[in-house]
Image (cartoon, rainbow, N blue to C red; front, side):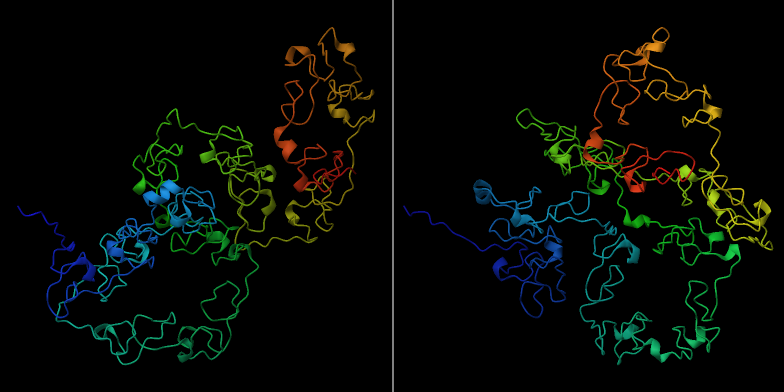
Length: 562
């Protein structure tokens, strides 16, 4: 009886008779015309975006390089072999991607929904490419059909074919076939001017007598230079921005205030609503993320249910449970698990500013509801945008004057003569009657007892307040004991027992829960010194951060006592 002999045959994935180890196109069949290399005779080499030697059409990860660790090296994706998994593979930046699969092994991934599998931090929004042919939809003539990349009109994004016998001739080798090249024997210069005609050209060939960059055939003033002041710069004529209000352009984006929906914010000029004058982001640069879990809907298996980020299938976009043997850690005890906490050892402040990132923060932005550039705190019309026509522009209210009207401000104090009680004397703006247009010195409101509480607000205008933190706002001398019969205050903190949550412990008065009557520590203030002198004016805006404002009606907003 003969012994069995093991037989081995060479692998031939595409079954074209050419073994894979000799086949230049192991997934495309040889047609046995011309050179026998395993590729069809009309095959054009594919692109290899990540330069890992595996062409994009057979590369499962065309934008991530294969790490060639002798484990699934033909799929084009970085991976970890079983041996590496047993030994443990280093992850230098601690972002969950081992170094051999991390394109940025020393810089952690940001996990913001943008290329979160490459291991690199990123902060841009990629252009959408629906057909995944490498050309963004915005410049793809066929956004739903992939480009064939056969070196024939490859830049249009549309599928196209040429017969095997056809030869695309490009005599001047400028990338434009002779059939569409207006100058087939002269190479295109590609200088941003008529680059699709195939002819060499330069702006210098176009006469520009005044040298202002506007060719004479487009220049209304060919012998006079354009001033380039963002006012009709395309006409080639010198000009000055008119002084009359309806032709102002506050943000210098080329759109006059009268037509600009955002007169103080320049237009972004991204071919999306470029005529409204507002900064914006084109919709095609957004990938929709309905559940706001950082995974775009196109990649999210549960687009309406946010991912839980508990290190269990965190890339599928679905909420999932944690098994008992895999606890969730919250090192800083702020309620956000470490896997979802950008600052896992420092607790979130929960002050309404980026409260989901797990990091403490202390920036308090000024609210501007009507987006007119004036914070609501100083905007007389916080729900209506200022018109910015140089007529009461500082009040934040819309107003209008006729085009023929001339706003005269004789004393140049910013208040037009019709509303200026002293049109020939400028207002001194000292916080006292600054809207009447007259120079004036600070006149304190009458305060007969000199306790700092104006008589109009002082219940006892002839008797000074004792300022013992007990009814200090009424202007009357008092003590905790004098009011025991009416409103006891056992701890003497100025909060009667009947509304004091801690009647035997005085309030600490640190601007943190000061109305509950209990001693407490402001957790945020212990970390960040917003208002060192506790005068209600944040350090960033306080000219005297260690001295309390006395609020005497003179420059009360500067934070300094006067």
